Image (tube, rainbow, N blue to C red; front, side, top):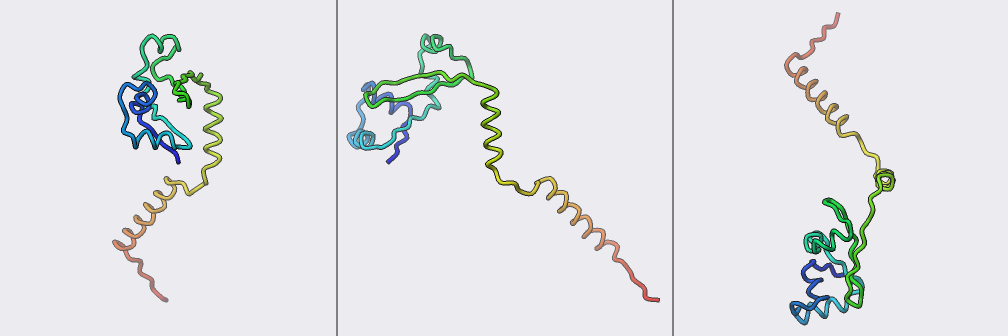
Length: 127
């Protein structure tokens, strides 16, 4: 079983500042994998620690919660080349499809042709 914890719950579980419901503790301890939502973690890092880790606005940090209750923080250096390589891999994994613009143009032309045909029907004469 996998468990995703809100940052508050993870910190309360580790620090013990607020008691968790017995069922919550049971689920956390029984989980094969415990993930922590880090969406709000950056805002809860003390300013001194953020300064020590050289975190800047928009930066990222990897946070791990050990079985022993320790929180491990590691800054991740951003590399433009690595990011470009990740984008290339993702693009290669995407299936090719019809161009949306080409499809819209085709449908637009078909609609225009239908309007013209309806407004000015062709007359054929047999000689």
